[in-house]
Image (tube, helix red, strand yellow):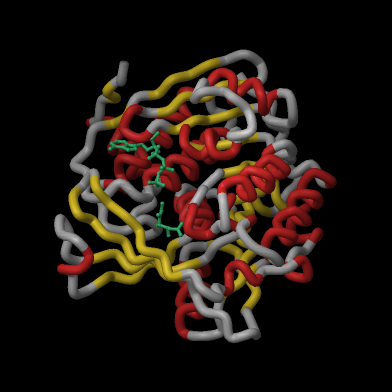
Length: 333
Ligand SMILES: Nc1ncnc2c1ncn2[C@@H]1O[C@H](COP(=O)(O)OP(=O)(O)OP(=O)(O)O)[C@@H](O)[C@H]1O
Ligand SMILES: O=C(O)C[C@@H](O)[C@H](O)C(=O)CO
């Protein structure tokens, strides 16, 4: 088991902080973007996807972020509200910044890529004046997404939110969410990621994201060494995602759980991590065993990668349970 003390006297379950952007997913898939002519617009941004996924599962979710003062910013705010996400922590940029765009390319189910337009984006203009201590202390948990550390003043806003969370006993989830295009170099990334990870209770990332963060060590992709490093700081749980090979989770109390995947008709692979994170967090916040949360996360990921969108495709509890009734987890060696 694990030791996460979610405070019961809080009006929100999970508050996300970071990127609110727009996904433009190619309508014509199984071809390069050069050959596509239309896209469907969805709300995107990894932390936004996770918060939306959590809300769809019934968690009381909020968000701390900044949107552009235009139609895209209003689209995002309206979508969050329609999906029962508290937007009192969302501020509107007044500098003329724009909404980050993620053009997604589905060359084949396993060969997807994202073309990011992120110059002068509103999400990285989030600053410390936009981070309310009262807002954070109302929540049981805070979700930090790594890309919000990519530039000031968003970086300082995240560090302040983290300090408020630790001050008020708010459990902190750190989804590494490493997107190289947002950074100058990976050493700079690792410096800031380490400073945050050292204070977080649950760290979730792919093997590659942990390798980037731990590049000053010599762990040679050893999951167990990775986990033990973070247990020496504040972590209670470390989850390492291995794509279609599944995932592994460790607890500070000595538990290790491996999870396979649920085979599905894959349309696109992106969104798997956000779906996994939202459902895994849901399981932890309901006091489930680690393996139950991992199975719920894996099922959610399979559902989302079989659909065109990420945010829109985030499933309800009923949809996941229905999926689990007919699915069988394929254990990867
Ligand atoms: N092809 C697949 N089929 C079924 N399940 C998958 C597949 N790929 C990933 N998953 C599930 O989703 C989880 C997260 O996927 P992955 O390790 O790719 O994270 P990620 O890189 O953060 O995802 P994203 O592409 O959304 O950024 C995996 O641990 C696994 O449970
Ligand atoms: O996080 C991003 O900026 C891209 C997302 O919007 C997109 O939905 C995705 O890649 C999810 O993993």
